[in-house]
Amino acid sequence: MKKSDFYYDLPEELIAQTPIEPRDHSRLMVLDRSKEGVEHKHFYDLVDYLNPGDCLILNDSRVLPARLYGAREDTGAVVEFLLLADKGNGVWETLCGPGKKARPGHRFSFGEGLMTGEVLDIIEGGNRLVKLSCEGPIYPMLERIGEMPLPHYITQKLENQERYQTVYSKEPGSAAAPTAGLHFTPELLEKLKAKGVKIGFVTLHVGLGTFRPVKEDEIEHHTMHSEHYTLPEETAQLILDTKKNGGRVIAVGTTSCRTLESVATYHGKIEAAEGDTSIFIYPGYTFKVLDGLVTNFHLPESTLVMLVSALAGRERILEAYRIAVEEKYRFFSFGDAMYIR
Image 1 (tube, rainbow, N blue to C red):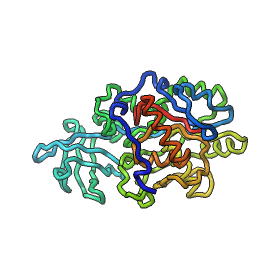
Image 2 (tube, rainbow, N blue to C red):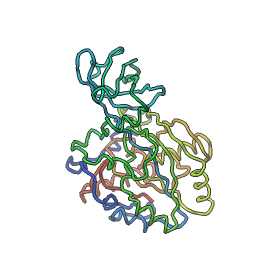
Image 3 (tube, rainbow, N blue to C red):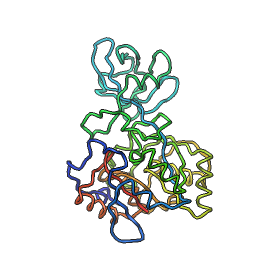
Image 4 (tube, one colour):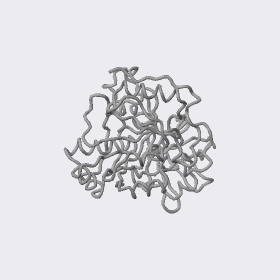
């Protein structure tokens, strides 16, 4: 398959720059794989499409305020640091720009001296290993001096940083939000529970590779980035019970989807597991766990468009996206949602 098979034309003005308020008033396109066409709803209508005994699997990863601006101690040059992965002992894999001003041995000051950093090494792909130091634990300090790493296509400043977190975010570690979950409110989750829909959590820390373009013309040659996941025992049992009782397992977001399908692929069944996944789901893939997916509208030619095409069919997805453009849906991280059932 060619990368160009997953292209669609998107007017720039449809890229959402700010989140909808309240969260669950965004639009929801419903694509039923057993019927032709799509339905146009609002996200709070999701309750009507789920049955007692179904379960929703949510990704509870929390976005780190991982964008830091450091002043080099010898020259005062300002360099942007984007923390990608915690390697332990204060060492982080980091994207630096401009890179030529962040060489091994260079030391930086962040937050007017509240944190310091030293570049240790340049690794594959040009990322840096940086040793961070501060008084006390690093994560609370990041909450204090870091900025939210919004995607490059969002150019407006986010007034409330919590709007780039899900209301159920708990485990810090993501470089980007699992955006399908941004539409949920506490009240909507309570309505779902009251209807008999079960809620389970996984953790997958979203890496910046999510936004990296596919460079290979033949998508089968594309290498996925690796991301860390955890599927707890409680969630594994919930999924097994749901399947046993005839309910549906619906992932919220491609990150939850990739976690479930990774565990089923790597272990041959659903069970409690933790590890790293670089699973690449594209048309031809046979889903082992998923019965449905709640997701946002994704970038043209991205691995995420390929994933939803694997679930609903490429032509069906491209037609749905054409309709979404025609109906002026809002796209990408702060945009509207789709429910594939």
